[in-house]
Length: 146
Image (cartoon, rainbow, N blue to C red; front, side, top):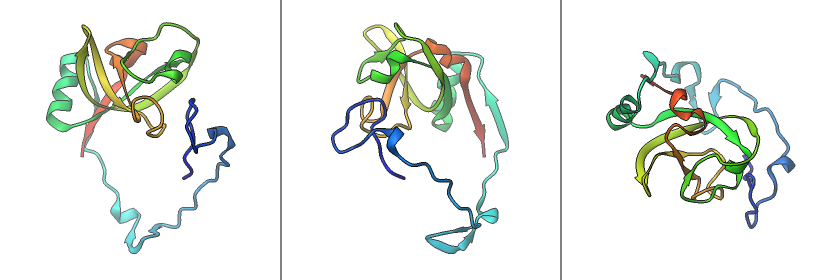
């Protein structure tokens, strides 16, 4: 898949709107190893669950690793580059799913450490910190067991 500059100027990368989208062909086998059958190579989860408290989210990340999160993206998020993001200006653009890999506190602000899918030229090398509870993120965390 072609790389592009998500909402920022990135040397050597063009705008994402310029990339022609093509639906991949699924032939049921792996292109790099035809002995792998798609149907037989699937993993299924045993459970899927959300969280009621920040403490429960932290405990799950500590015990099992990353969780899936989602939040409302506002216009000011597009230009994030460092620090702890907190929505201050701009209209809502829609929802966005991300991977939450940890937490911390910076300048007295509790945050979630997240990985974005917009490549490593966006944000802080593809990651960002978002204030816990900002933009609805605490209510949209989910995980599962395989």
